[in-house]
Image (cartoon, helix red, strand yellow):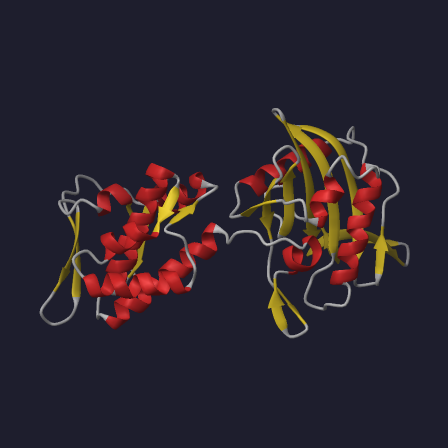
Length: 333
């Protein structure tokens, strides 16, 4: 990664001030390049939304070469726009706005990252009556660590116009809104993979309740179907989920499909970050009413010679784990 420009503006909404930097950051500062690079890398491994800029998008015009303002002037304008939006809202946290232009491979990127402040304690050395005292002081303006994913931000590919976006919903005028995309960037990104999966899960649970199907089984089958289609095709196939989860139950499949259609989900849902989904879903996790929690690798769960759920006549279930050759207590590792 080659960082070309970077500037930091302070969105100190608690004091009602935007402290706009007049100069870019010095990239020769120790660890600065590494910090920014890790923030962007963490961004790329998150559950981001995606979209495509059009000729009518204001943010696209700002970051393009047709806008003759300097990088610093563009960044200051964006900071002013964002500060005007967040300052009246008590729920949106204060933070710093990191604006960066960088390149990776043959592509150039423009990033706008809002680094929300996090309260953290630190020490302060003071003197009282000529005696040294080490006190704890709460610092209200600590930036996120490089290992944390930013709460709000967008990274725009300047070559293709595609973008990746992360945001949170905040309460504004009595309504929870995605202010970062809707009010600041004025963009309409696609739903995130997490949002789409949540819709699918709710649809499956609703149908399972209607047709008196064991919820833990249909959710496990749903996870398995998502894992397989993402692994094979890099996308989630909602029709494949219906066939896999409600196999042989045409009525349940139709009820599921009606919910999916009403939520306007496509049959094929592209997953931009397949590695994240594969890593997250490669284990089936169950919590029993006894308090026992168990994680089962997907390939083992699919093999009834290894793991089997058995429904008993009295309405209870048994979980049988077969062919165990050894047991390792994880406390010792």
